[in-house]
Image 1 (cartoon, one colour):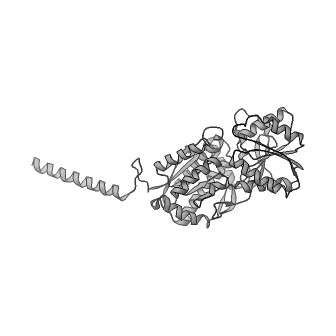
Image 2 (cartoon, helix red, strand yellow):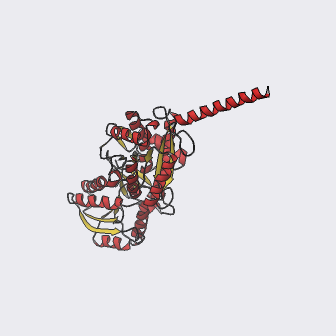
Image 3 (cartoon, rainbow, N blue to C red):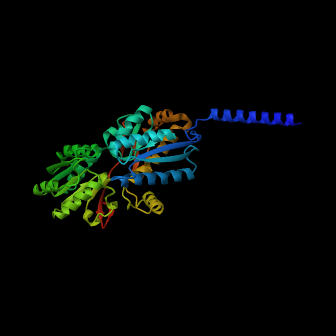
Length: 391
């Protein structure tokens, strides 16, 4: 009786082990042992600490919000979506390290990077792996140099050209100065196209002043040169952290031109200990305005404020759109997690040039095979300590 019982138990154990082995062989597993074909795994890269953290935190928050909505509505093609967001502190080397961490996690699509410098470095790696990459806000041309990468934001050339045209067509100034970061691909890329288009506009660039990453705290010389040249408007194709210093220093020397920037200035009102009154009247071109009256924008703003206690900026809107753009491309292509990284990428490359998306940052957005997006910019002015759409 005991021998018979032992024999039955042994046979049962063998059967269980066989079933377990068969199950493992039928599915791909990641390093944690979970089924990597059950969900779309979206990795995110951006600065959630450091001087550009306003950008990265906004992107992470909005991506989480969009994914929550999608999962609650049934997912994408029946698959749930996961997000793993890694901090790169807007640093190229840390961006690549974050990418490798996400690969180990099992990422099969990338949202990022948020800033251009990191994005260019990471894009070289995604090209090697044929990983689909959609950056919400990396605007340098080199961010989409490879056929696996696409943008939600405007490219730097488009921002520079649009800024010059807006200033000229609206008669904002006859004399313009530029202060830009010559060591940064975002800033220098916008400046070059702005300067080129300025030749076609009814204003003159009377001072061109630069700085570098090693010298970005004292702007007194640049501002004095702009003031001496009689610049009525100062174009700032830079990030908000440097812009706060420029506004402070301009006020201290009683220089009050119109300050005009691009999407990099979005976030300036969130800087701790910055006197928001100094930003009054600052104008920036951006694809998103939180005070827009359309239903889509107002719902997003309300949901974001309820979840995170702050008003979303353009980077948040870009990221929210990015997740829904991925969804549209996946649905168009019929991709599934089981297609693997390269298979998903190949399917989405074709789908991106076929879809049209009505998002927060643009109606009827389409994409070129080059990765560039087609949409129109909007102009915002900072008024009474808040962003306000210029009608």
